[in-house]
Length: 335
Image (cartoon, rainbow, N blue to C red):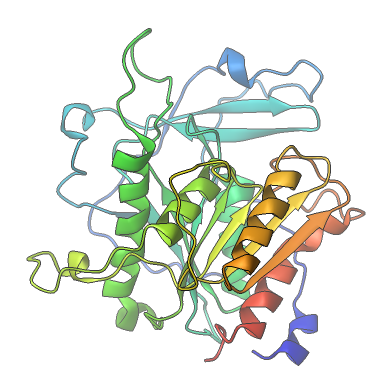
């Protein structure tokens, strides 16, 4: 795809129907569907639409792949627990969220035709408490696959998950589990690049909110592969070739080093979001370090806009098109 062709990208609707992505079964291990649980108090906003009476359920998606088929390190004591799914209510929308993740996984949305060789790991947000799995996960992945970009939705372990016993210590940390899951996802994709018709030199990560913090960490803590590792996956680098923090958390961290070798970045948020100033400051830091970056701050859209087809009047509803145009401009979409 070239820049001149990017204007032809279609803004398809993004409901929970299959839009033509490749539904190849890619894992021998079946991951059980999440168990529906009651809505948490922190997810209730009475000003929003009514919470449905039926239990929440996970949107349809291709078969997922376990990041660690034999079990994720650090999750040994929780492997018998299933994922949870419940409703979250916000002022203008109600949507499902997933928590209690102990078997981190990738869900691949592969282009049915016209693949570009580019791949994107998508890390949904949710404050490290839960994952907004539809508009910050599967919906974007479907759309990217239609543009010829292989998209992989990451279910990572949650450092602030409240699914455990009351007053219990956190089971995971951001650096110890969530980042490890993100790095493993990048390595796994590179290890199967030939199978999925992906260039191992065009694998990036896009994250929303808390997932954006994971994109930051993956990009700013480069990690080479171990050539002599027994596990073929661990032989791959986990440093992304590009990263996209979208209304991201983590910008105020003081333990991140930005250098000229930092991968190129695409940054986006809304003006009426608390992340606007932090996003702008991060862009300036990247520019001063000589890192190629593109920044979009839209007039309105709030926090957590993801991809939505119900607000076409907002300019922010096409941010994902700008992202693909940027990928094209940077040369990541060369078949």
